[in-house]
Image (cartoon, rainbow, N blue to C red; front, side, top):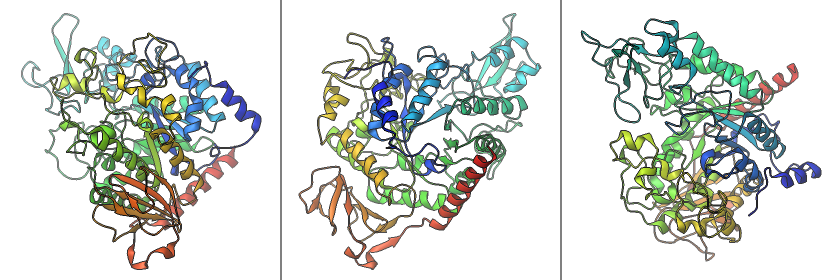
Length: 601
């Protein structure tokens, strides 16, 4: 595979033909059924030849993203950062990390992608900033009691000399959430709060400067054509100013650091900013809130558009577990008319090929350990089956880079190369998240597999056995995982039944079978057991994750069927808890609001 600085051939062909092969960029409801591809820039493609992925590499592969059929790309943080937490310690929101390129390159990518019908979503990290950010450096220099420190959570400490930490809150990365500063004379100073690493001081969202600055950040990127923002740790921004210990105050919204009621005012103001722009600029929340009603409160029409569905991602392999999660998700979203989102993995979790091959197929951060065995064949079969399952569900679909290649987790990284703070703050027990962040393999039979120029050492090493998983190898194999994804996305776009809309369960096929209907002529059947089962009556097989003999569906596989509704008795069907009337009402409301915004311009 050869690369040019920009995939100009694709752009030229697209612009010259005048044909629209992807959804219109002016469609106000594009996000309700969108296929969104997550780009972890550092590991996507290296255009500069230094072993680290960059915007030049992403621009050079725009043709790949178009061929995959995605509607949008979501970038993990691409801003200047000391990289204490993989870029989630942001130093400057109005620039690009020099390793990744320049602001001009980011602006060029946004426009080049739009020319191909691909929108851009960026990450914002409002809970905290880098300790190298000018605000925090100014706060350290200004000293106790200064206005600069009021933008953060500084505290003199408890005890006679302030030697005791203000609270015993536990970090999301384990360990303490308070770090003590040192005064210019070398004496111990105030403590500051960080819910993640000490290099990520938490912002005080009760301060008007913090709220105003983030609204200006949204405008900065919306002005450059960004179609939406993904909001990291969206439920953690507001802290209880009394600094109580966890459990001292009870009741909904009373946790000192999570899911506080004041958060909704923040996101209402963000939604007002987004709605002031032509076209639909979406807000996507990373919200880990177990209470369904409180979760969906963030998705009211004047707040976020969508939020990640982590419940399904973490579920163990199995029909009953999947169905329970799907039913709960659809039921939770129905009252507010918001579409569900479906995702199998991301830059934080173990890749599905590895996880689904283990005895315990569920995901939980605290369970991650070195040396857990996995069956790669079973894992691959299940990952392919799960890909078709989520692509057939109502709502939008997220794909983490490399999942379309069937990449496994890299679990034998040299310890000295691991950078993830989750590894170090666990005392080396947790292997961390770098195993799912290894650079993608594009071509060739040995590392760096076209990610970087031949002979370049990539920032994380690639396994030699990835030679069979390169884009080049899979494009030549009709049965590859890459071609399975491409065909699934193509059908998802072409079939009117798929994307946002209602779902009906098909019951009576066995305890290992998950089956549902979308519309009158489409059915998805998933066999989560190990033994083949007889396929229900159908007219044709549209797509399958494993070879079929025409009669049976193998274990750990999925089939998409074309079938007439009369092919099964009415008693075999069960209506889902999705309420289409709510969806239709909100779709009409959103479309009308978008039209009014357009008319104002």
